[in-house]
Length: 247
Image 1 (spheres, one colour):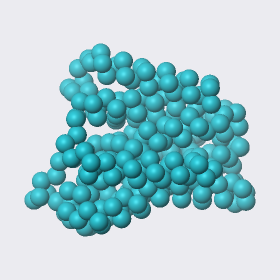
Image 2 (spheres, helix red, strand yellow):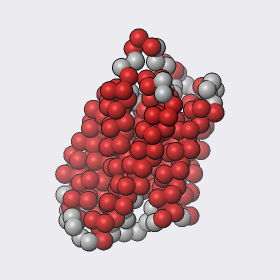
Image 3 (cartoon, rainbow, N blue to C red):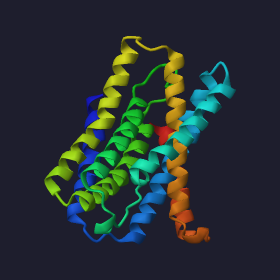
Image 4 (cartoon, rainbow, N blue to C red):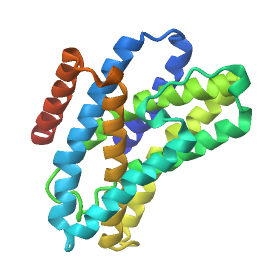
């Protein structure tokens, strides 16, 4: 568990700090990396999370409703995050910057999302009965890296204060590890019913479906066919399948 916590924390922290090292990001390569991450996350959600959710559920229709709830909840969160959780980098102009209050709003929404996805790694038996969660951890890391980079690009533009931006980054990087620790505590002490965890993970899987599909569609200019992006997406899906069977 400690290794997973460190991976979650440092993947977000180091990715966010890259904003200072790469001021002029190559958009083409960045979008391809996003396509890969989005395809992997989508595939893991489809072949890992959702099958276990529905196979363990007494009422699959109810689970489907909670997945939809998570999908639309993510749409609401994006109103506050400016799309940072799926790597959407905004080039803010000074006159549109809302300063500290806007940055706090973005950070708070991202922390909520981080806590939810961290809790998904708590390993309750009702969810992870047949699979190890290494492939899921990898998927969350692939998602958090561009999300952290995008978050910092937004906050740095809004705050114009690098030290405070780094403090915000550390708080975001801690969110998923804290979510994992809290979730694991509730699992180990049977503090929440299995049904409650199932509902929570159904909501998070809906979040992941929204994030991953948004990544893929947003990186397709005018939704024109792009063989390179399709190839990268297929590779991401194949690696997800391989990770699910090998780990």
